[in-house]
Length: 476
Image (cartoon, rainbow, N blue to C red; front, side):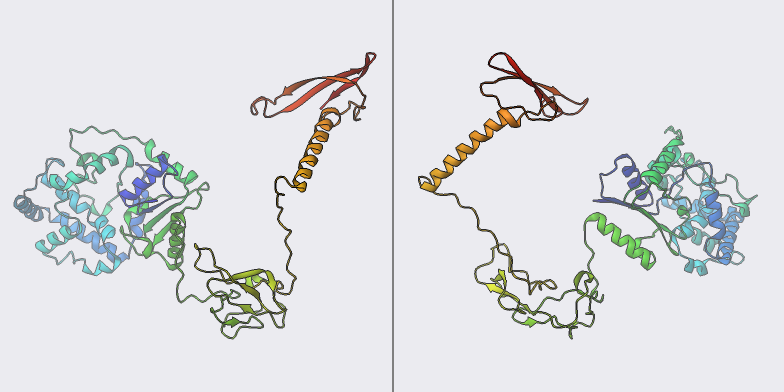
C-alpha cells in the first residue's frame, strides 16, 4: 500500500510517513509545498520573476494593476454579485478587504491552474471594459472565494497554515501605492473565535526527517506551479527517493507529465514498491541469447545460428560462449510426460520421454533445452535408497546386536577415555579398578544466554586406584 495525494494531500502523506514510518510501502506526493521557514519567502519572489515569458508576466501584472485602479466600479459590481448570491464578509471583515484579496491572487491563480499557452487570452489592460475585467478576475481568482461561504470549507487548512504549515508572502512592487491591506496572513481567514499560535518547529522537524530518513518517497512538481517554489528536497540520508519536475506543468502535475526517462523511472519504482511487475511492451525486441522454447510435437535444433531468431548470436544463455559446430537437438515432450533422469538415449539426442502422469497440480512438464555441453555427459547414477530389514529376520537381529555393541563401546569411550583430556595434553591412562569423581562447573560469559545453554563447561575429575595411588586430575 502506497500513500499518495496532491497539494495538501501530498503534504499529509509525507507527515504520515514521518510519524508512522514503514506503515506504507511508499509515498507518492504530488505538488506538495514545504514552507520550512515561514518568515523567509524569497523563493516565491524569484519564481514570479522568471516563470513563463516576459510578455505574459507583464500582461498579468498590468491586468492586476488595472483592477486596483478601477476599484470603485469593480467593487460596485462585486457588491451586486454578493447580494445576488447571499454572500457575506464577516470573516475577512469587509467587502473592500475581500476585493483586494481576490485581485492580489490573480497572478498566483493564473500560474497555479493555467498553462503558458493561455497567456494569449489575457485581456489588454488598456482597452478592456469593466465588465470584461470583472469577468476575467472572476475566472482566474473567483470573487466568491473570500466570502464567508467560500472560506468555510478551507478553515481547517488556514488554521493549520497559521499554526504549523506556514503560508507564502510575496512582494508586489508593481502594485505599490494601490494596496490598502497587502497580502493577508492565514489569521485573516479564520474566525476570530478560534485561537491560533504558530509553532515554527513543526515544519523544520519534517523537513529534517525527509532529508535524513526518506525511504521510498517520490515527489512530483510542476515547473510553472508557484507552490513548488518551496518544495521538499532530499539529503544524503534519503534512500530510494526521488524529486521530479514536470516541464510546463501547473499545480496538477502528475507522473504522466514527466519527461520519458523520468516517467519510466518513476513508474518502475512505484511498481517495485507495490510489488507489481511491469508489463513488457509488445514492440520491445527480445534480448539476444535468450532461449526460445520449441513448439510441442516438433524438434528444434540449436546448432549454429537459428534461422527463425534474428537476434540469435554465438552467445548462449547467460552470456556463455557456444563453441562452433553442431549442437544436440532438443526434444519437446507431450503433456503427461517428463524427462528421464537416465540422460539421453543416444549421443546427440535429447532426454528420453518417460511415460507416466505428471503431478496433478502441474499442467505439464517444463520444456528446457539441455545446458551447453551437458547432452554428451554420462548420466550420474544415484545410490540405492536404504531399506530397513523386516523385523524378525536374521539381518534385523544382526542390526540390533551391532547397534547394542556400538552403543556400549561408545558409552565406555565417553566415560573413561574420550571425556577427559590430560593437563599436559595426554589422555588419562586406563587403570583397571580406578574410581573417578568429577565435578562440573559452568562458566557463562557476561550477558550471554541462559546459564546451562551457553558458555564453557569445566569438569574437574580426580581418581585413585587400589592402594590409594593418585592417578591425576583431568579437565574437559
